Image (cartoon, rainbow, N blue to C red):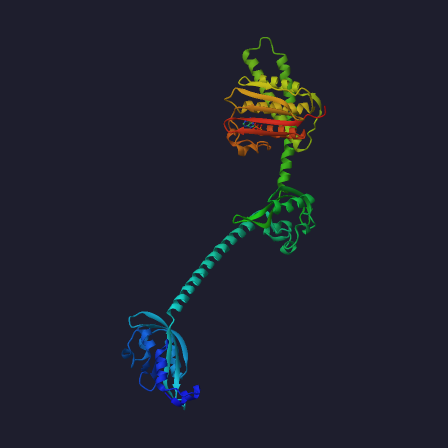
Amino acid sequence: MDKKYLKNTNSIPISYDLIVQAIDTGINGVVITDNNLPDHPIIYCNAAFENLTGYQRSEIIGHNCRFLQGKDRQQQERKRIREAIEKGESCKVEIRNYKKNGDLFWNDLTISPLKTQDGQITHFIGIQHDISDQRALYDDLERERQKLEQRIEERTEILQNEREFADSILETIRESLLVMNADLKVISVNQHFLRTFKVSKADTENQKLYDLGNGQWDIPQLRILLEQVLPTNNPVLDFEVEHDFPHIGKKIMLLNAHRVELAGSYKNRILLAIEDITERKVIEERKDDFLTIASHELKTPLTAISGYIQIMTRNIPSDAGVQFRSALAKAEQNLSRLNSLIGELLDVSKIQSGNIKLHMEMFDFDKMMVEIVDAMRCTTTSHTITLTGDVSRTVYGDEVNLSQVVSNLISNAIKYSPNAREVGVFVGTVSDYVKVSISDTGIGISPNEQGRIFDRFYRIDQTQKKFPGMGIGLYVCNQIVKNHQGTLWVESENGKGSVFSFTIPLGKK
Ligand code: ADP
């Protein structure tokens, strides 16, 4: 080493031995190679280098540094070291090295050339330390990062697939769908909406629902319902809107709105589904028209046949045989059945067209009940009908219509309890209402059917084949009771029987 050089940089003279001692006790491994000797052998190594590599000084001196790479010769870093040596430059690498016992360690190596005053490279000094722990930590982190990245990729793919799936449903569905935020501003719409209303996304998205088109959705009652969806979680169900829409003309739409629920939690979004029911309504109207015309047309010849049968019954020849008499009786029976079926159809068509007229007057309710129960007793030999209770006052209502309700409920109680023997009829007052209950111990009605049996033409599947009927009776009864500002309901258990009850206001005294 050049003592003058040392003196110049530190301003104080330091002995060569002191420098060697300092290097020897340092914690970094230090080697010096001689550039002027063939294959640049190591001519010096410190104790830390011996510790680092596990080799003894005697096994190190004279070797080229490459012995530390063992068979691991393809590392890019070796090329960088070679180039630096060729160019006489410094370089820093992290290289895989192997200890004497074969253990891998990551070596953080810096090499620097030592030059003479005229720039000739005489030696290279290599300073190194073991960074295996840091590398292991780094590798762990890297592995975790890669795992995380892979998980994110997989999750993103799943989400994307789910999104595409949901989008394809939204786009295929034959119903117009709108998603709105809490201010009822439209966030997105599906293609069906755009096609149905002949509008573009720009006309719709980011607009308030009430400002769309010519204000067709700005209906005070709808406003109240929609504004309640998020605060109360109450959906809007089957809200009918009839409107002359821009571009598409007069239409009837059915609206349903629900709060959006994702992964079990409610979002501040409303999904509004709009169904065009214009055609369905037209078809229903045609069906109702057909029903009205058909029942009226059938009624006329039926009345004539009825008249002829009455004449025949009155004029039965005295010598007529049993067979003739029984045939005539059966014809009369079936005719009256046909009459009541057509009567029911007429009732439906009257209700549908809103033509049902009530003849409201005060009448003796108890007398009506006794008359109906007596009449019903004549129609059955299988069941005993028991009447209990009374109203003991006149009631305001349409006697003919209310008789129809009671007799319908009694005849259902008989029909749907083929294995029972009794039907109970109760009549009484509750507060300022009349209450009538008809109970049977028949086949009963399951809870999920109980809400539907009052629908027009609804019949329970299992009973369809066994019992004749058209599914109209309860619908008509319900409408008549409703027209009296009353309520009709059923309490029933499958296999155990049913109780049909209705209440109507007693009306003025
Ligand atoms: P229909 O008797 O002509 O089918 P309704 O409108 O009177 O029509 O009744 C509708 C349905 O309700 C029936 O088909 C039957 O399944 C059920 N139902 C009505 N009354 C009873 C009853 N008392 N017990 C069991 N089921 C009944």
